[in-house]
Image 1 (cartoon, rainbow, N blue to C red):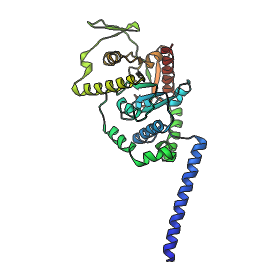
Image 2 (image 1 turned 45 degrees about the horizontal axis):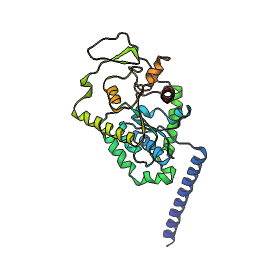
Image 3 (image 1 turned 135 degrees about the horizontal axis):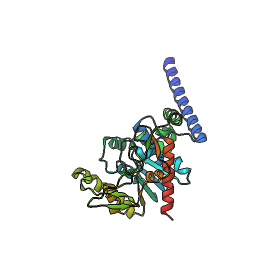
Image 4 (image 1 turned 180 degrees about the horizontal axis):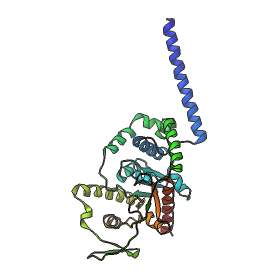
Length: 304
């Protein structure tokens, strides 16, 4: 009996210690406001993005898209006086981000849609996320923040190390695209300046499978517009060819849907011919800050 009682007492002490540690950690986070932004795996990063969006008070502006958009941290927009929730999800397209936006009853006033992967087919990543978001652990995070992905000690440590490395090791430089010659073909559309000439190519539209994704994103954006949400497409610089104005399929999509297209790369290229990218595709943190600043400026200009 003595041994049994001792085991029960030890188990109780372990439980009490765990409760005290969790309570202490929750208090530490509340006082410091510390949380990870970019996490150690795609799944955890995506869960953190979704958690921050669903468990926080309503934000009037939301950015949805792929990991390209994920580099534009909310704090960069905040520096310009614009509060933005970021749903740039690794390995996902804008369509799943819009699905997350629809999980809240209080829709945002403005949705910025990253054009990278805009017509991306549904992936295994999205199926995994749907399952994780419906799990009891994720729902527990609504009432107890330490259970959220962005508040895990390992994630906080990873984010601190990543910020330190990104400040010390700048990404690889890529120069803005500069047009050397404009060719005249049977069908052409001027864009802002005579030096930018775009040729519509029907082959841009792909096959039936791709058209199905285009139809889905068009319907989703149309539904949001019908519910009073302002929509803007955003072409975020992606290394080679950045600064190149958008044409072809994407511009036609924008015009058909009646959704304005923001091109921060074009604006930046007018005054700065270089941006840095960590892996030849994703902006490093200082360049991402510059792009967020340009987006805010374009939004401000469009409202004048």
